[in-house]
Length: 339
Ligand code: PEP
Ligand code: MN
Image 1 (cartoon, rainbow, N blue to C red):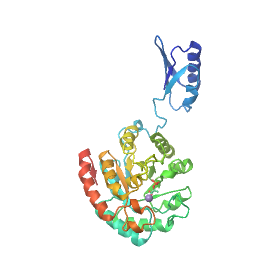
Image 2 (cartoon, rainbow, N blue to C red):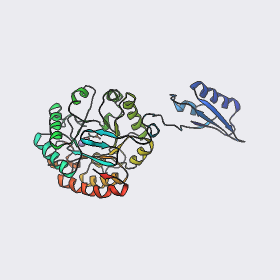
Image 3 (tube, protein in one colour):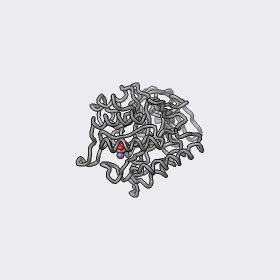
């Protein structure tokens, strides 16, 4: 950490800051020029509020140098993390893995025909919600365990590992036998009790960025899961809330290279929730692959106009298949393969 003192700060003020840093456990290196003093504070694992230092008399500015997350930070595993799923599907390796399927599991017919279409087009993981976080309590909330059973069955039939959202701690044991990836939705990104419990399971977790979360907050949430011993965390950009109203959310493509710089965890892009409009999903999916996404999460529905949730952002199977062809052309340009 760097503490820059104001020009002309008094010696007693400088000493007060040094004393405070030493008390916190830092080793302090002082550098005094003709007009200014800068303090370099070195220490690991020290938990403190930076604002308490900024408020001390004579302090100009304070900057953290090291990240507050340790396990999720790139330096923990500079070579990157590969999350291994059944059927030889690896997220974080050379292949860009496409996860696709309906927003919610509605019926056997709906799920199986969608699963067949996405498998045929080259998706490697099947998605489908069983527990749905809906803004309105009157909207479809998901078919729960029945949906999970269908998802597992469809996954087995089409040789696809499956992903579904877990909304609360009590659902974890229920979901374990059915799913290969537990998805934490945007609304639960900072449900710290849920994250802690997910740290205890030995199953990959896909953690979505909260609707108003910074990337540092996303990584700190990943840290909660990893601190419990579960290192198989996949991050996901799914759009954030901004002043723009044309799209449902603003898809932050820059989050992809930023996360790759800050963290070793694989990064997914969800252009379906990121835009909320079917016509904008393919361009954002293409952009995400070009920006280096390790995986995509895309909503596809065999009959989107009749979908129980998120129909407007769900691709028709034909659109999905065309998009996959495009992604197969884009990926090699950035040294990847859509596998
Ligand atoms: C979903 O994947 O259907 C979902 C609810 O996502 P999010 O948490 O990103 O809104
Ligand atoms: Mn959805």
